[in-house]
Length: 142
Image 1 (tube, rainbow, N blue to C red):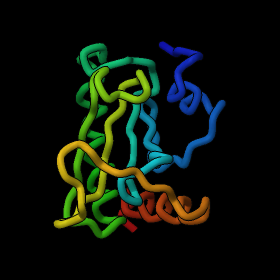
Image 2: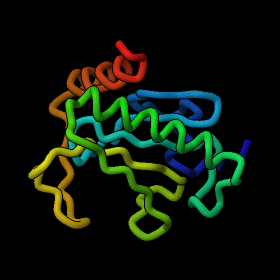
Image 3: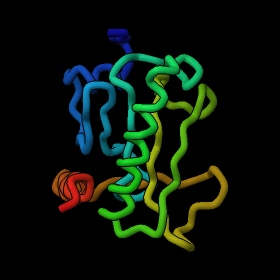
Image 4: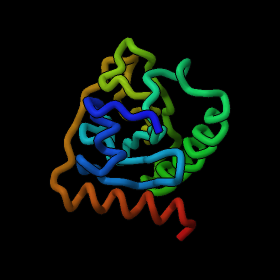
């Protein structure tokens, strides 16, 4: 497995660093962004280290985006959103050089305009765990 020991997301995948996980399988990991645009903002990463979408082997594109689709549905349902914004950056604006897809719950007139979005923080670890439980429940159809 390709791993970069200096990569923040590789360290999360390995368990060296903690993250609030909402989804995982053999190929990908989904966890709450610690500086969300809105509550429920989730990141999906391949477990192996690939810096950009261009670096990702074509055999992993389908499973990665099937999981992105599934988690997007879960985030939307869990957060009672009107939709989601799904995006990834390649190098420019990519804060961690490990491929990651953002899933952001959206509502009409939620204040996001262009790409200059304010970040927020969870009020507490308990709030973050509550959001995790909602997303995980939605993913399991509960």
